[in-house]
Image (cartoon, rainbow, N blue to C red; front, side):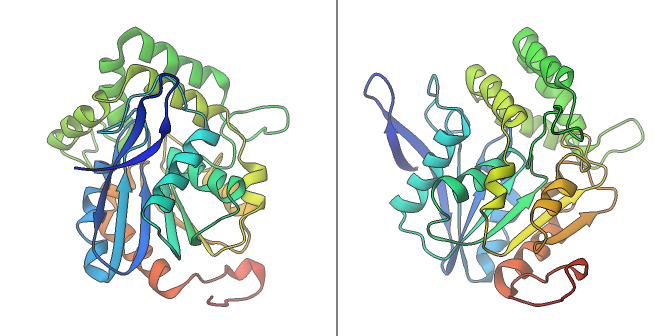
Length: 292
């Protein structure tokens, strides 16, 4: 197994981040969502490296095979962990791809570390720019929703994860976009994370304001979101991120749920490859269709 050191904890113990590093070529770094691990990118890791790309996916601290620290689940620390990955592997001309919570790490890294080493960014079903409904963010999600998530995690984390997994993919009595076997696999991926990391990260992605972070992004950007996302509603996230990045390419997947990296895996792989290899087409609303 391969690990990167991302500092030390309060007791002086090394914090180690597990990572996969596949293929050769221009680097792509995949940042996973909550409450999963880098193995959620199974279909992307099986495809993207075959197109002349070096694809790195790592486990966030507290999740997967990475160190389960007691603290450090704020976005400043998580952006510093991402920097450790890029620095330790000496990656240049990187395309950062953040899914859901991982989109926040992309945004915070770009502002906190000046976008060092990064050529392009992609936000997939991302929590940006600010999920929580406040007086100055009326399109956000009511705090009661996140309070209920925290309460259910503390009451019975296993039961919460199994219920959440179905919502994640839009599973219902009439819709079965993923198999029960896949749901079981996701439960196993999520349940190995620490209880503290699961709880603290939910607080971080629900309460962190990324609006100022997005304003500092100057590289080509891609935004992908499903319009049937019940986990991170497109109205509070994808649409607002697109407003904040008017030159970004914005693609809406009709009928897609949150977990579109599985349900729309072939289309997502094609769109990501097109963005990585060919650039981004500025939306017509900007008044141009320039490829850059």
